[in-house]
Image (tube, rainbow, N blue to C red; front, side):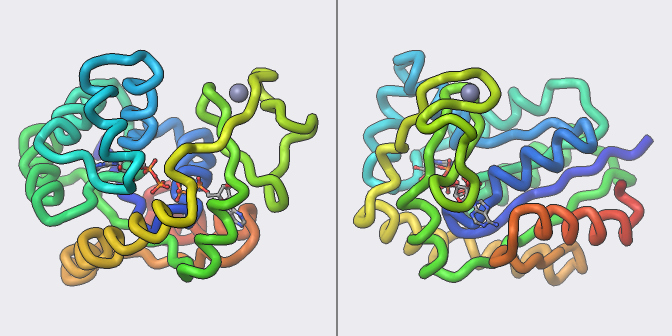
Length: 220
Ligand code: ADP
Ligand code: ADP
Ligand code: ZN
């Protein structure tokens, strides 16, 4: 069976993580989120985590080839498909990803980029009230609140705010996305491999749109 690879694109706070999680649950495809991988390294206080934290705090990309090697390691899992959230984020990473794909995937495997389009204004609204649990579940105080104030619905863990979800850092991350990340969409568009979704809708409606697009392409 050919494998499916869906690469989420979109500014920080566009809902990539939320949608990638819902898609992974439904399809059984494995989600690879480089942000989550880094946050796990930071929580475990590894050498890589300590280094990455310095950049993440400032809204800068973690430099070097370390992200690509984390991704390559994650691709060793057995799965019928993979969902990327947060990688690639610039030209160098796209090149690295294509090299990794060439080693691992076959011609018949299907690779699509999925853009979740959201304005900068909406991003700022969303990230200001994003809350996270250590188990990986993401909430929003107004749009997607937990049942019990401050506690995770899944594991009961204490919710926290990401320390890069601050106005100044958010503004820098948006700049980085528009400058380095967004231009990568052209590569997929030229090959007819770009799916564009309106991200300024309710979470359930976006999920429905994504499933309809993927089903139209016979990927689900
Ligand atoms: P990203 O992974 O792109 O940074 P997240 O999935 O973490 O984005 O979502 C950012 C914030 O916005 C979270 O607080 C999430 O609960 C909330 N959110 C996600 N999708 C929507 C949506 N369609 N409408 C409103 N809020 C959303
Ligand atoms: P968001 O979903 O809000 O854009 P992520 O969780 O994807 O945030 O990423 C958080 C931070 O982790 C980024 O701002 C960056 O510092 C770092 N990071 C994540 N993915 C990459 C990557 N592919 N390359 C370099 N740094 C990354
Ligand atoms: Zn939890």
